[in-house]
Amino acid sequence: MQSRPVEILPSVLTADYSKLGEACVGLEAGGVDRIHWDVMDGNFVPNLSFGADVIASTRPIVGLAFEAHLMVTEPTWILESMAKAGCTRITVHAEACTHLHRTLGRINELGVAAGVALNPGTPADAVADVLDLVDLVLVMTVNPGFGGQSYLASMEAKISRIRSMIDNANSAIDLEVDGGIAPSTIAAASAAGANAFVVGSAMFRDPEGFAHATTQLRALAEAAGR
Ligand code: DX5
Ligand code: ZN
Image (cartoon, rainbow, N blue to C red; front, side, top):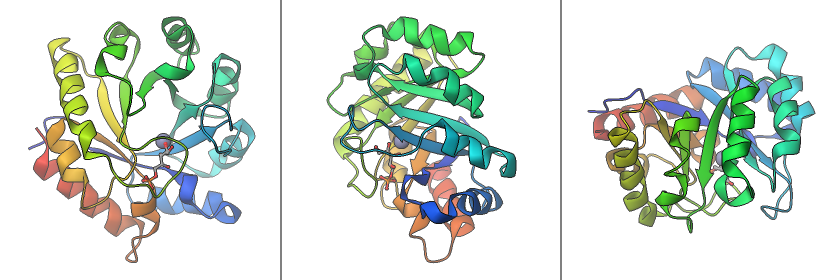
């Protein structure tokens, strides 16, 4: 059984943007744990998505915590606006930061929880020297930029490696996975050591709605967890 709390974190990248606030309210009613905002700059990834103003526009109508997943090259310039928009967790990519240690320290100075994300091609050791600065490590199980991609099972060895690093540090750091998480893949990611699960397409495409998807995914992750 999962020893850490399982968190189901919908990515609104695949939502209908004409009804974004409505989607967030519906997700909250469906029992999710946080809203995952995929912020893309068109440089770090070949796609553009939301800025701080869009996130801030939904803040007043949603009671859930917001986390920003910054797929932004050299993201220092956007940290403060993301915090002001109401994100209480900000995750940056190790690959996007020339000075990762300093950038994570800056997020902490803003009074916001810091996260570090790793692309599929980046080894686990890239986070070894910043675990003391983060509350979460995000392992990408797709190459970032788009929703609806296929889960990379080859990332499970990295997930387990990072789980061991976190446990050896005797830390409460969350291990989050992101990309292609669905009823058919979440158990394997949980068994590998993840406890936080970003879900985009599988959340929005469930014909029985957000509550059904959230309950089903949480049960699968809890049953398979370590
Ligand atoms: C991809 C994003 C993911 C993505 C998840 O760059 O970071 O959060 O939106 O969507 P699915 O669950 O459809 O892979
Ligand atoms: Zn994401």
